[in-house]
Length: 236
Image (cartoon, rainbow, N blue to C red; front, side, top):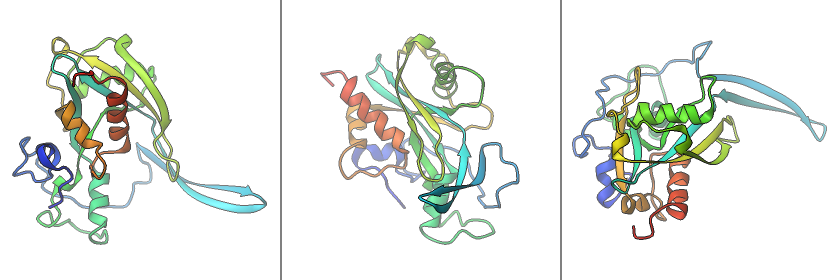
């Protein structure tokens, strides 16, 4: 069983559902793979051809939606707020390291769904005609349960999600919340299954120590490092 956190952080994402202090995130009983539908709601693959120095080049790319991400800090309890969820792409990547992806059901005893559990910043896709701050505000409410004014959401910077086969625009924000702004348990909407996770600043520092491995994306590490450098209380 893979373990991506050491010491006290094993309780956050040890990927052993029976031992995790957070328990089983969801009840995934079957996983299988299929070809991509002709029309996907989220991605659009295409081929780009171009001439560079009189040489014809061909690149296969995937158009993806842009996104917003939020570094959330609860000042009432001096904790950073994250989300935990199953990510099929992460599961596929973990699985493909061990065996070729084939037709048929995956052996969940050998490759449990916990391999795809991630730790992430609160985030969402830009899939509606609203300002990035408004979209970030909605995600904070839906995923983490905090109702915050948009003017409390501060921009950090913009960057690309990738530069190879895909390159969505990502907007990273920072927002301080307090217990009084908590209006629900969060957990996402529609079919989302999301668990809210709070880490002390010492636990967050463990995430970015040299030699650590996490099942989260680069935004998680960048966001934590930015907070520790720019916003962490001096006494913490």
